[in-house]
Amino acid sequence: MNETVTHTTDPGIHASAVTADSAVVATPVGAPRVAVLSAAARAAAATLARRSLSPVIFTGAARLLEFTVLLALGAVIYAVYVVPTDGFDSFYAVPLIGGSLAALFIIQAADGYTIAALRHGVLRLGRVWLAWTGVFAIFGAIAFLTKSGDAYSRVWIITWYFAGLAAIAVVRPSIAAFARRWTESGLLERRAIVVGGGAAAEELISALASEPDNDIRICGIFDDRKDDRSPSVVAGYPKLGTVAELVDFGRIAHVDLLIVALPLTAETRLLQMLKQLWVLPVDIRLSAHANKLRFRPRSYSFIGTLPFLDVFDKPITDWNSLLKRMFDIAVGSLALLLLSPIMLATAIAIRLESPGPVFFRQKRYGFNNEVIDVWKFRSMYHRFADPLAKKVVTKNDPRVTRVGRFIRRASIDELPQLFNVIRGELSLVGPRPHAVNAHTAERLFEQVVDGYFARHRVKPGVTGWAQINGWRGEIDTPEKIRRRTEYDLDYIENWSVMFDIKILALTPFRLFDKTGAY
Image (cartoon, rainbow, N blue to C red; front, side, top):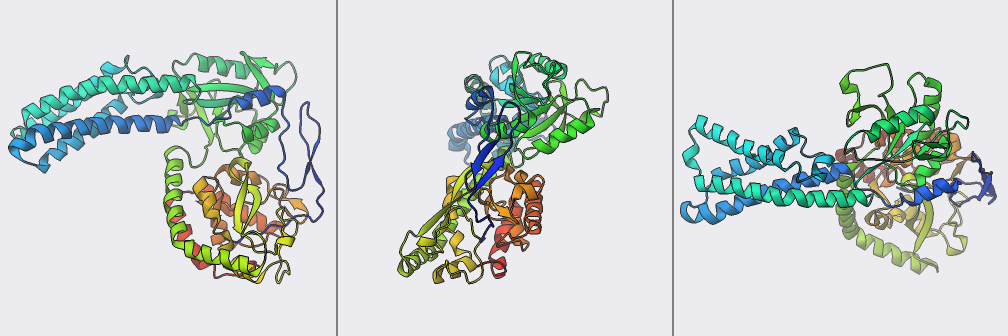
């Protein structure tokens, strides 16, 4: 969807205030604001440059692997022994699929798919064998009660049972080897920051350390207090900065979890912290093990036996994130193929009308405020190129070419962003990416909208929920950016694949509305 933003025409400076031992730093308009952190915080962030592997995806992959191996073993034994003598009988599909699925459910019920269980494959082997044995005990009971035992080959049943035991003995230690190796390398872990120092943080860290085989790695502490109640090192972990600096830290380090070590009674301080931190794409949990106020067990999430209150969840995570990425690649590739004639014709028309490159790149905010280059077809005369979008495009703007005017109104100029989608910088659907240091009424967007950066907790999109609801075109008033942000946050909170499909299906019809598209 065609997108324009308003900037100040004076390429001056934007003063960004930072706390602690940092000074006020002036950042040129049009350049990303650089976080000023302590040396310790920068060093800690450097160790977290690589993304970790989601434990949910790892355990899910382990389930899928074991299901596939058990099912394949039963199918191969059936094909080799039963089919040549008795012919093909689809009746065998019931125990094949049902038995393999039942094994997964029983292992799951026995906590066989936790990170701890997978990390210690050999030690937990007996439990998994017992689950596999239970599947055949259930199968035997059902066959006896329904008098259907004669329908299945006893040799096939016995062979599949022992082959399954042998396969589990190979697969489980192999999974354990990967789990241990990736845990040691920092790939398979949940990286946590403790918010709040002093005695509460020390008690929390000690409690986490006493939990066997938890997958939490404490990466540091952030706290606003500077007195004796919050020393620079707590339980061996350094205090890296203030809560305000934690937001900057979270922009450059791949952190999964923020654990707030504050009592529920510290309501004012707690709310102030959460107001700053909710813009980050992380899970935020409130430590509850030391609180005297108790809720029902279902109100908590647990790390081992330690209770936590869920405050915010990172949006579109784990399998949902993988599903959305697969959707983007599949649909984005198909769209590129189908729209390639239009894109080729547009490129030719641009070159024929005016000299200069076909494409135009502009720096915009991506996921978690990462600055990315967004691709568009050039719609202006090359001599009027405005990569910083310092001057908003207006109706009958003399800088826009005739071809440019048409492709902007039809949003054809946005089609090259499909390459950003394939590269993983954009999604097909999401909040539209805005230029860095975007302004309206001489104020930065984040100064107009409280919590504006929360829209960057997911990847930006080629089209979005705000554009579908009419908030398309130039952003020249504070009300327009407020309304867009409302719809963006509504999309993030209610995301689903069907929601994405709905937005994509409505997008072509919304292009007929030319309001604000110059």
